[in-house]
Length: 126
Image (cartoon, rainbow, N blue to C red; front, top):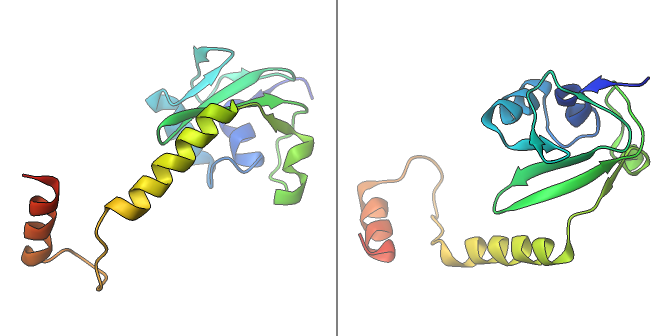
């Protein structure tokens, strides 16, 4: 196998839950191959560097081998290698921690009540 569609590859190595989700992220411009924005039909080759926008950072992966079928999570390391800089991973960790601690939690599930919205407005200074 020499080439595989990027949406199919991202789905196969479990970076996205569904192939259609991978295709929509490509069309939004959140996926690049070797520094160029990639449409869902763009083909990826062995040795390419794929960058995916994830929250506040761009996660980078190097393609080791190609595949077109979904594999188990334990086998993913045989096909891609994460090359995201440690500084970016720390930035992501801090962002997630900030989100977890700064946003007030609701006791109930479902749609926010009027009281909840007022508390949010007070908290965020609106």
